[in-house]
Length: 234
Ligand SMILES: [Zn+2]
Ligand SMILES: [Zn+2]
Image (cartoon, rainbow, N blue to C red):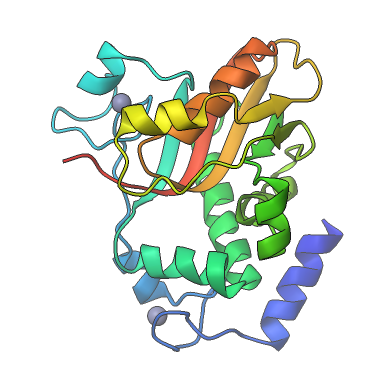
């Protein structure tokens, strides 16, 4: 509460410029209202993987019906395309943590709109320690931080990345899945809880799938994912 009060005082004293057009940003979001409206928002899609569906929301997509992922549901705010790719890049490689907070506030807003079931804990997808020390921060953790103001418990010590995965760009979903096997470790039993994973971008979903599988092996009853953007399948 004190944090969000400080945030709003800070935002009033130092209004930020929109990261896309330099107009005054609104609502402490580092984006102006027009740019925010113009982002490639995703309509509700497959309840399992958030892929938009022609048939409308509600039923799982073909891929999830054939081979259900280990995560039970996914919420993605945007399609991973311009200018969202630019914003994510700015956070990850430019260290724009204020923008990470803004995007995290959008995640929080979406989760509030969704309402129940509320997760017992929020787990940012961990980075391998060597990558963490290169970058200096975990973007997933920065995105998840504002969820604490919604009364959710941020648990970033539950999972560890124990293997550094080679770059996955250009690999098939199957290949990614194999590369990721055994990448994560859950450090204590989860005992039936409901876990919400947070990450920046979901490409094939292989990372979230592997982490969800590891958490379920450790006892998690339900694992969902909340991401800024997802790459759409053709
Ligand atoms: Zn703008
Ligand atoms: Zn699906």
